[in-house]
Image (cartoon, rainbow, N blue to C red):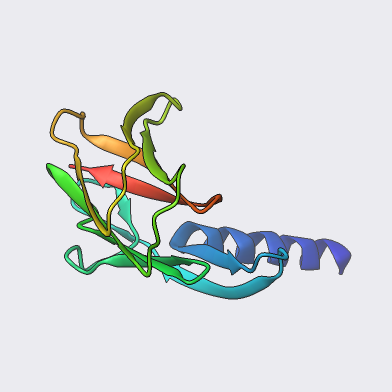
Length: 143
């Protein structure tokens, strides 16, 4: 009976992991405030995409600040809009490739920031946005 339960748990876990991703939000104390389950789909290129509507902005929040990123996947540039943003020294956007190498830094943020990706190769990049000593991380797909 115990083996059957373990086997059932493993099978259910594999099915859930292969088709879904979870994103969590936390408050300043480290308490989870919300969770969103995203269903992943395969694109024509075989790359998993979180949003089937590619023109729809992806949003997140850091405290009182709302961040919108679009388009993702991107061909030549990506826009990062920061709503409710107040200028702080040290706010920046950094972009890393899959090996962890820094490929782009945008230190002087505004309410609407445009990142030029035209010189980058096709692939997945990791964007870190730091606002008021808080960070959020994003996966960016460059077509």
